[in-house]
Length: 115
Image 1 (cartoon, helix red, strand yellow):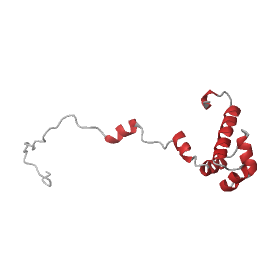
Image 2 (tube, helix red, strand yellow):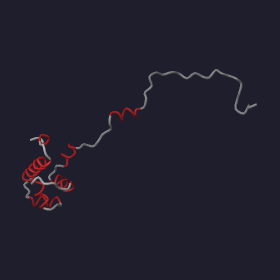
Image 3 (cartoon, helix red, strand yellow):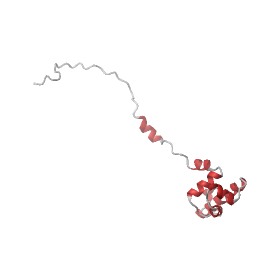
Image 4 (cartoon, helix red, strand yellow):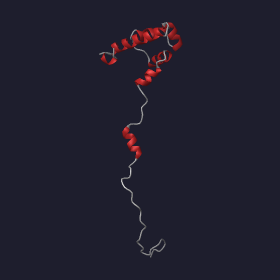
């Protein structure tokens, strides 16, 4: 089931809770074991698996313990430079090349020759 197909926040939390419970079971951990290893309360694990809300730090600790932090990396990858920013940093590229000629104006005036 895709999370985007779920209509409510409660439905999304319930699905996430079920998925985390399955990952915990696949890792052969009890709720108490996971809670201890992650540094959260057993009740926190129970609430998350039941689809109740939890603090983000608790979720991060549980994800870390279950080896799922890479999933968060995929979910929200680090922002790279935007193409428009790259173009701005490149500066304006020259369209043509011209040689600078030497000034041929010789009016005879030099610095310090003020009248």
